[in-house]
Each structure stands twice: as structure tokens, then as C-alpha cells.
Image (cartoon, rainbow, N blue to C red):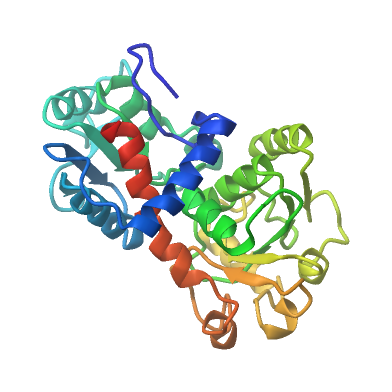
Length: 343
């Protein structure tokens, strides 16, 4: 999205029009093929992490350096302090500084800000507003890139779209099965939201299988269905089709995407969440399930709990794309950086 000052931010991939998204995927593939270097000489990108990261931090930092820029990584746990996002409050709590002031100051040092905001983790209705990342975009005077909020993970979705296009070629009409998986520490639903919306924009038929009570965000689903109708794609979920179990979703799929996510009904209550997970039965991607697809490839954004979310046989097998999609984080982010900063 472009703000009142004409600055382009990336909160979700919906901030890029369809043509620009397609061009960026093609540019990502070209960047990978060419091993692009240079283009960001003299540019500085700041990364602020309010939560942990392995792939996002490393791939983004490597992308900046390979393009000749300089990255500055700051972690809230060790390098700075809690920041206030709400407007008009008396700041007598834990946060000694407002995002508005931090954003204004950092904008004078840096050419771009990439941020992974904190999640309160108590209420989905609160976290889904993405107030933190939107406050940074509202107050910064340089582009702000979302490195995973509660609702969206545009960088993962861009790499996933690139990986899908590399593996399948034309994506229109192809079938993508997204299946919930077990994890004692469920990941955010942001990856699934972003992938689902991006896939239907590219014309894919998407099936999302999950146990009862693990519905995705209703507003995101409604938006995805509207986009699917406009692009001759489709979405089916277990929430609106009780017969859509794992096997039904995967049958005939070209790609199976494994991912854990929390129940919105138990969000913020770990005891109830653990009890619900214990009653879900076995939700794992194994060779038996994968065989139901149409020569199906398997994807997972990582980190993956082996033999709980997906078996070793699947993850290490010839149809696994998990390392390719992880590598593509760097290539697609190089393309994005060149788009935003390199001209």
C-alpha cells in the first residue's frame, strides 16, 4: 500500500496489483537464475524483530548483502525496548517509547524498514488488527515490509508462489491442498492466509483441510473467495464442507502444503488449546497421503516437526520442495528489494 506521502509499503501481497505480483514472481526466478549482485550500493535496510526468526532474518540479511547494501539487525529482546503502538495513551506502562518516534528517527538513518511485530497472544480479535505493523507504516518515511504479523506473511507467500511456478509452470487451474498438522507449538495462521489468497489470485484451486474448530480468519476467507471468483479459481475448506478431510483435500492435488495453526476458539488459552489438539486424531503428511495427489509435491514453510507434521520419508523424498522454498526466500526478497529500492 502507498501511504499519504506516496511511500510504498508491503503489509500483505494484496498491496501489489495482480500484474505487479506476476512480474515480481518472474523477476524472482530471473534473479535466481542470474545470481544477481549489486543494485543496492549505499543503501541501508533495518530489520527489527520483536519475535524470533531463523529463515526470515538470515535470508533477508543475505539478500541485502548480496545486492551490495548494508543491513542492520535489531532484536527487541536484546537490542532495544518495548514500544507503544496505541495513539493518545498516557505512557506510564512498560514501553518507554512510541512507535511514532522510533519510526520517524529510524527513517532518517535507513532506506527501508523490515519488521516482525510482536503478538499479544491473548485475543485473536486484538492480534488480527495488526496494529503494530500498521503503526510502523503510518509513521515511517521509508518503505515498511512486514516480516510476519498475526494476519499476513507476504515474504513467505512470495517465495511460495515462486516455488510453485518453478515446480508447476503455469499455475492457473492447478490444485493446491493445504492441510493442518499437529504441533505442540502451533505456528501462526499468517502463512496459510497469505498462501491461500496469493494462490487464488494466480488462478489455483485451493482446498484447506483442518479439524473442527480450526477455521481460518473469516474476513480473510471472504476476501479470498471474492478474489477466487474474479480469477476463475476456487476455495474449499473443512469449515464449509464437512466432507473435506485430509484425504479428500489431497486427492488429485498437484501440491500438498503442510502447516500447523492455532484454533481461533482457544486463542490465548494454552490449556484449552492443548486439550483440543489431543482430540484431533492423526493429522500428518506421509507417503500414503501424498500418493492420493496427482504426482503431488510437498511444501512446508518451516520449521517443521519431523514425524509429527510430516514424515522423514516425505520431507527427504524426491517430491519434497521444502529446501527449494526456503532457498527461494532469499531470491524473492532480492527481487523485492530491487523493486522497492533499486529501480
